[in-house]
Image (cartoon, rainbow, N blue to C red; front, side, top):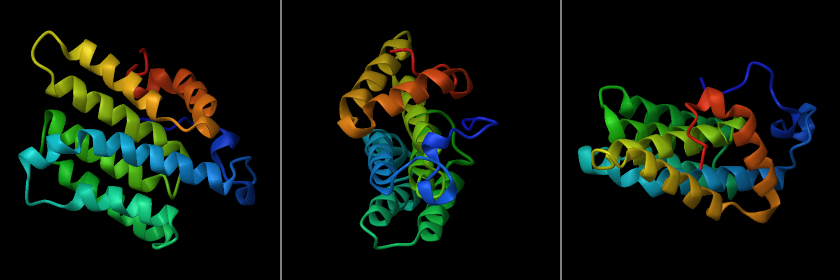
Length: 171
């Protein structure tokens, strides 16, 4: 479970009654794509011929550019998550990160899903005994990628939803 029971209006677009601007929604999607792409190699090493997670990340970026509709990005996200179903560990988490990045087009609050799964992928890929350090390093790397316009919004979201995101945002 990565989404709160009560939706935060800061992650609902203005046209839907929230306060999120389209520009910030796009920044959230791009940041989620960066987070997912950072760990995508774990999936691609396990399934080099399966392009679904990579296509999901590309769909997130294409949605931001206006090249695909939200439903197309959302569908690509679902396909990426489908690629994860029979996997375990870092490869599974990396595919889920890609799927979450694509569905940010549909629900902006999935931005933390992409980040959280990427952190889980980094932890799972780390050598024995170094998983927690790898997770903290990935979390900090992600924070370093945040655009200024959404930096405080995402950090606050991490604080508020850390407990439902496997407590991965303690970096």
